[in-house]
Amino acid sequence: MARIFCIANQKGGVGKTTTTVNLAAGLAKVGQRVLMIDLDPQGNATMGSGIDKREAELTVYDVLLESASVAEARVRAEQCGYDVLAANRELAGAEVEMVALDRREKRLRTALAAVGAEYDFVLIDCPPSLSLLTLNGLCAAHGVIVPMQCEYFALEGLTDLVNTIKQVHANLNKNLSIIGLLRVMFDPRITLQQQVSEQLKAHFGPKVFDTVIPRNVRLAEAPSYGLPGVVFDGAARGSQAYVAFAEELVRKMPPASAVAAAAEAPP
Ligand code: ADP
Ligand code: MG
Image 1: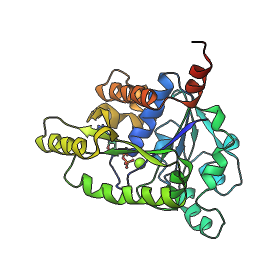
Image 2: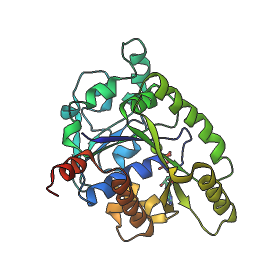
Image 3: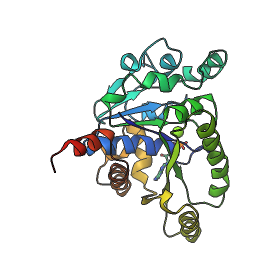
């Protein structure tokens, strides 16, 4: 079964979507089967994977409202090498429409069960809020990857997220844990960023990923070409860092299929 990770942080503009699409492309590049789910009504991860959100016929909205299965709604991002469950503005309505429904936090989890065996990794790009949409992501996931900038208020914002994850773990999803914190948009010339980075490591130890994603203009340019940086310009420093991050993740969290194969292999 696939390992399912949410890319979450309730702050906007911290690099969630950039991390989701580039990690998806990085994992695909190292041979992993990936499904990328866009849970943000802004649809940036959809557009950033080359799928036009205005033309998407079936999206994650239909999956949440159970009018389509994941297998019916997913589309292939050909150039990127992974599958996409798209989102557009329609998804904002799901929040309200789901309130009256039963199992409203577990709709994505239920829907994903049918395709879990087809992927090594499922990555979920969450909106910048702790809403019912994010809750659906957290209930479906095994873990959370938290991208963060090494800035003064970064740690403060983390407290809310950590508390939410604890509550979801206690009440809704016993499997959920924080996989790790990813330092993004890092500029080593800025002393404050180095200091915050050290604080993070002191505070969270091994929960801080080794890979650091630098601030890199190619990563910011790529979405306007409908591609993750990893696909748009694989030689850019930022792209290489995301591929290294994909490798770190595979090393630390080997896909279940690889674990099973190793167990079956003769000694
Ligand atoms: P979020 O999904 O958390 O709102 P985004 O991934 O959309 O954040 O990133 C916010 C902005 O920062 C975007 O314009 C994106 O292109 C830019 N950005 C993200 N990561 C980097 C990076 N490593 N270097 C340069 N720009 C980046
Ligand atoms: Mg985003």
